[in-house]
Structure formats: structure tokens, C-alpha cells
Length: 320
Image (tube, rainbow, N blue to C red; front, side, top):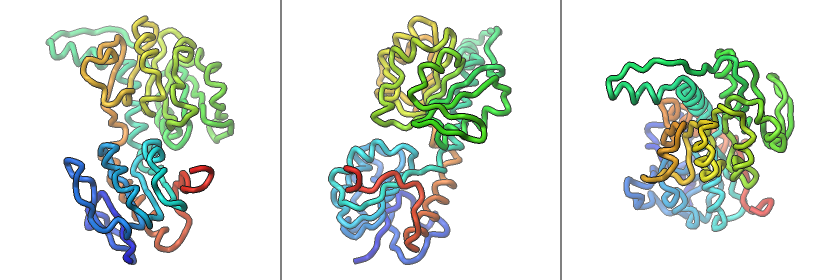
């Protein structure tokens, strides 16, 4: 039996892949019905295609009877973990930590600055050939709360540093201390909201964070505050957000929504004070070189039987 690696990138385009494995290209195809590139029973490493429908990404899983590693090219793996019940025990699921921090943090800052400085209004006025000046908030001197202080949250703070913000508060799953200051546990988030001018969500989607931003959360935000979501859509209760935006008390800039894609006619499209981008935090020119570096490093570790990077879970362990 050969040790196959299913890659969503043409193997010839990934320089430095280690020897000892057979590399097969499979990205699901344009219609999601691309034939498998080989016998699924021979697949030892499955690299999940990026930016394809969920049904395509999980389609091979139940037939990968000898797979040892499932590697995503996303930071979040909640969609894949939901489909692991059919997979064999002992498989390590690894995420793409290190790939998306740069691009997602850039977008978080882009959304924040665009929403504060009124860029959407400028674009609308330009289309109508109207010169509409005005006074808009600056990011300088603002208090920023980052909810989800992992690799992406830290990268966001890196990019906040030159903008002369007054203070950055950090929230993660549990309390800890970093070189930049304390990280508060998620249980403290409601008490931190009234001081935050900008709240940036970069937390993974878990049972603890699903619906975290509900009516109570939004009510605790200060008047005039901006909510920025580069995490996952279901972290926010969409109905509660639409209601809060309708009051004009807060504004929002969202790269992710629930539902997603946001369908035509959904009230969030026309809610006042909202800027929406179509989940483009990860896909940028920064993605591919970082993804390739991750794959080469991870597969080299796999071949050499060295500890893998970014192991999220092992199937069959801890109830998985």
C-alpha cells in the first residue's frame, strides 16, 4: 500500500515537498464532483481543500480508512470536527495556525479604519458625484477590546500599535499574562465592554463562543462603539445584532455572518451602520506562500515521525 498525500494544490507548485510520499492533486473540482485521485484507502494525509463547500471538503472522510493526518488550510476547524464521527481513531487534525494571521489581522484593521472614518459613505457619494466632507472618528485614542487572543488576536494587536490607541484589552478562553499585558478570561468580557470603543472578535467558534455576542453583550457595549467580526458568523446572534444596529447606538463591520453567505433580502444587508465584506479575511496574496511553507514543514515532520504542528485533536481521544 502506498502512502498517498491528497493535496489541493498541484504538487509541482509546492517546492520542497519531502520524498517518501506519493502526492496526488485533489481540490474537489469546480462542481464538487471531481473523482478521487486514487484509492482513498491509500491516503495517509488529507489536506482539506480551501474555500470549497463543506460537502466537498468532508466527502472523502468516511472512506479514508488509513488516514493518519487531516490538515486544514483554515485557522478554524469547527466545520471539520463536526464531520469526524465517521473517521478512524488515532487521526490527528491540524489547523493552519501561522497561515492566516497576517491577512486576517490586516482585514480587521481595514474594517475598523473604514468603518470609523466613513469610507462606505465616501464610496456611495463618489458614485453619485457628491463631495461630502465631514467629521469622523479616528482610531487614535480609542480603547480596543480583542475577544479571542490567539495568534490572530495577537497579530491584530501588532497592527494596532502604530495607531496610537489609548488601551488594548485582551480576552481569551482562560486568564494568562503576555509581554504586552494581561489576558482576561472570557468570563470577564461583559465587565470590559463598557470601556471599549472598538470590540474586535477573533475567537474560534466553540460551544463556549457560539452566540457569545447576544442581546446582553450588545447592550453592555458603550454608545457609539464599533463591533468588528473576523471570527465566525455564529459567534454573533444575528437577530440581536440587527436589533441593536436599528437603534443607531452601535455600528458594526463584519467579514463573517450567520447565515453565510448572507442571502439577498436579509435585513442585515440594509441595517444602519453596518459594513459587510464577504469572508475575505484569509484569501489574499499572503495566503499561498504561507500555506505552502506550512505544508512542506508539516509533511517533513510527518515523514520523519517528528511532532506535528498545530494539532487540534486526535480522533478517538477525549471523546472525539
